[in-house]
Length: 72
Image (cartoon, rainbow, N blue to C red; front, top):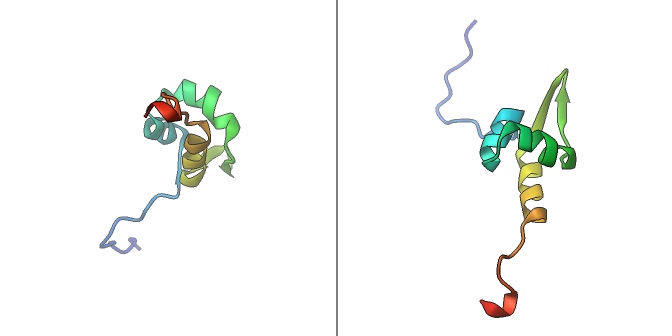
């Protein structure tokens, strides 16, 4: 039995390691060493999935301004 054809794409709620690294614009090694330890991951067997919300949270928490607030 073949799965039904979907009319609209299904939004992704989690990403594999390589996809998460690409979404952040970093190498897989940089992601693995510097980002992944800070994330809550979904484990499916040996696969570790990063929820998109976790990636967004990490970006928000590690963002910083490049100029002082009063200089803008």
